[in-house]
Length: 121
Image 1 (tube, rainbow, N blue to C red):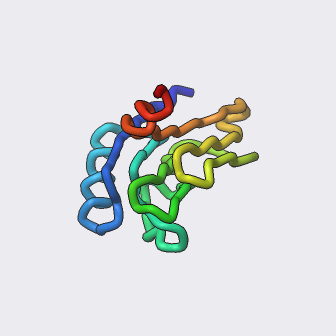
Image 2 (image 1 turned 135 degrees about the horizontal axis):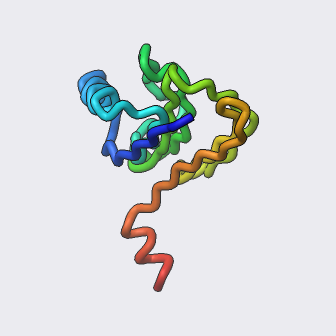
């Protein structure tokens, strides 16, 4: 089975218009698995991001609007979640599961350039 993975830094997805634009791009790209960084979702304020093409979403949010990552799975991919690991500060998300009887780990990481520079000093 061939799977197309697409990754985008969306710089926020809190408005319906922005989510619609992102979904249009994802459909045009025929993405099976979607990795989104900088979703800017806050804890307990995650909007409805489900769509008929991407019914499965896993999110990590943070109390600051400057972070957050999401992983979306297309309706065409028979993904079965087994485990999830995430950063409480909203910078990474790992999901592990099966696709067509094969084990996969899907990772989405977000590291702003300023935090990388500070960690190297």
